[in-house]
Image 1 (cartoon, rainbow, N blue to C red):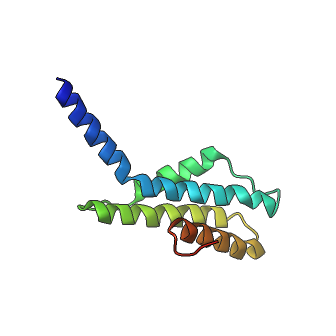
Image 2: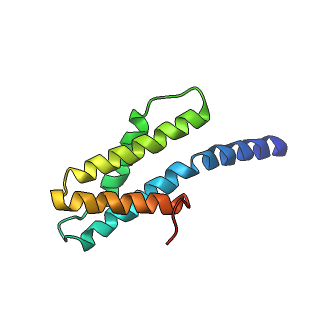
Image 3: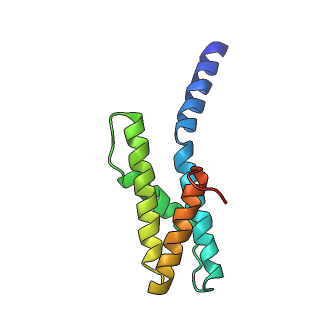
Length: 115
C-alpha cells in the first residue's frame, strides 16, 4: 500500500511540475500588471480578476494530444488573454509601455536578455 501511495505522489508531482512554466508566466504577467499603478493610479487590477482571466485562458485553450503542444498553447493563450484584457483598459499612450514591460519581463525570465 505504501509503494502505491509513493507512485501516486510521484505521478502528481510530475504532473504539477509539467505546468510550472505556465504558472511562472502567469506570475510574471501579474507582477507587470501590478506595476501599472506606478504609471497611473487608475490602473488597479485585483488578484481575483487576474486569476479569473488566467483560469478562463486555460479553459478556452485548445486541447492537444501531446503534452509539449498543450504547454505551448497554454503559454500563448494565457499571455494573449491577460495582455488583451488589460490593454483594453489602458490609455493608448500606456499600451506601448505595458507591452514593453511585459516583453522585457518575459524575456528576462527566459534569460533571452539580461539586466
